[in-house]
Length: 173
Image (cartoon, rainbow, N blue to C red):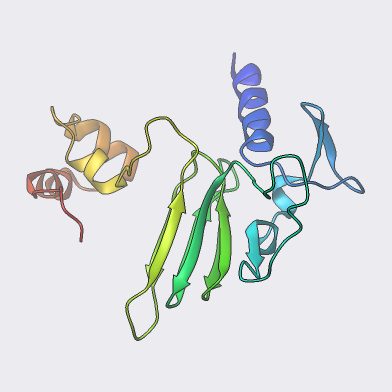
């Protein structure tokens, strides 16, 4: 059973994001994919949205169906964490007209690190887009997750877990 679980986790890690790599990649679901351990921020980044692209095709556009963030104004620091067992942090600083792709289902965030307000568009590839704030989901669930489970999972003292669960975890703005 454990071997099967490890194979599932390994397969999920490969499927968590597919980056075209015909030279050194692995063939997965009909595509050559880069080894996730070799992925870096540049694999998910595009600069130059302000430069016109070739749209002389049958639909008259250039479209990529993914979760993306497009910066219009300001400077954003973006990141995501790869799947278990690596849990690598992939980070990038974005400027106006930069685009970043977030692999579906991975923990990620964006933060304004500039001296002015930032404006960005987020495109989500889901029929039910939304935000899952991890701390809210874990410590503010209704009904609450058993503190013994969280104590063990986070290796915290039970007093700290119950304190965190007592906080109002809703609006994190």
